[in-house]
Amino acid sequence: MGLLSNKIDPKDVKAGDHIYSWRDAYIYAHHGIYVGDGMVIHFTRGEGQEIGTGSNVLDRLLFSSSPTRDSDNPCPKCGHQTRAGVISSCLDCFLSGGYLYVFEYGVSPPYFLAKARGGTCTLASSDPAEDVLRRASFLLENGFGGYNIFKNNCEDFAIYCKTGLLVFTSLSVGRSGQAASYLAAASAVVSTPLRYMTTSFSGLALVGYGMYCASRLVSDIGVRRDVSKVPVERLIATPVLDEPEKTTETAKAD
Image (tube, rainbow, N blue to C red; front, side):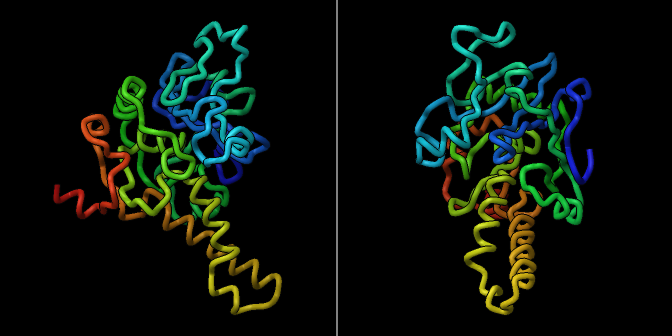
């Protein structure tokens, strides 16, 4: 692994790793937790369902993350799974013909910014593998709320399993680096007042890229303040995933 790619050989993946595979010509990556014995626990939106972006066409084009086996020819290891939510699939079905990549934790800010594509690493530290596997197994049995592309997606699920961190700001995106990068790119193009400081193409590009990097960094789960460590059992005991705005300081006072 390195600046150019997080790609690894499947034989090198370890139980507790946060893994992902690119979909649809590298437009979007599907994320999950490798649990050993060739199996992955991951969070899917289900096949052909009108949830996520609100557009059935866009959902099918970009964000379908269910295994793609024919129902008449189910996988001999994990079967045919089309339900939405947290599921367990074999590594081959999870990859759906793509390559395997490992998400990195505890990276430095310069390294994070050098990885210009979101959804590949975070400044946040990972918990021990046994905690990661316990969370993933618990959520496999109990669910992870409703799937939402921007606030509660497959990357959010994997990051929660690795860190136990939840975001409590209702107006913000979730923990997902790739969702944050898409919004950061849009913001850099249309919303920054700094674009009026220069009229040259190179100047506009530099200002836009600077805003893009800054937006990505402040949205990262490892630096933002609107997060709290939440025991996985509490996700079932109370509707934590749908709570209103709540900062770290407020959460600590509970």
